[in-house]
Image 1: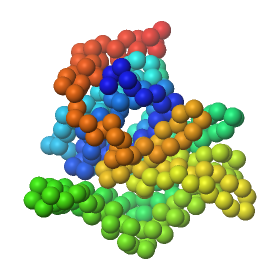
Image 2: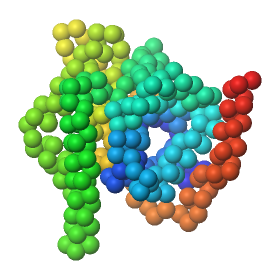
Image 3: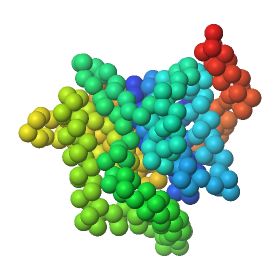
Length: 286
């Protein structure tokens, strides 16, 4: 796979939630090792600082961080847009080191003079703005539901020989207020994008991958959402002037067994990674 990586012009990832039980870091690693992006946008909630615990930080989570840092060490352009679960990083907005930048929002120039406006999206969440403690409580409940879901899936697959199911997705999709919230979120972000004459508005936050044209009295815009790496295992890819939603479950290449030795070849050692970062930092200072 190392020599046959799929080229991607822009990769947008959000809502990975590293440091939580629901994070699907192993699947994310397989995906990241299968592609070769030119520009990477980490659009919020990459590390879940709200629920971070020293007692739970699996090797696969660290490998995701190391892989992303190795991309930075090689000069790949990486933007980090903090979300609500990693909001403490917003105080570092404007920080730059070599090819890495922390920003609160981003506008990318695309082909045919089109522009993509990218931000996490929690600014539109009324719960986040006025009842942050309630939102954090909800996040803990969500993570607990994911744990229950994992046990249910184990029983479903091993005992009853049936497929996986998503309890949280079923709950969200069946609650009218949740459906209304998603629709309002999409309409609000799209409306502001139209008023600012952008061609695309790219969000995360609501864990709902989507790509659709939104129309109102002032114009139109393509709304995109990268989804998450807890339930949907999705990302956004922009290649040769076209956006698409990547879904891990639909990638035939990901259904094949991992070749022996692939993981060891795909990432540098800790010493090599540290040396590369030090070199990049020294070059930045000179």
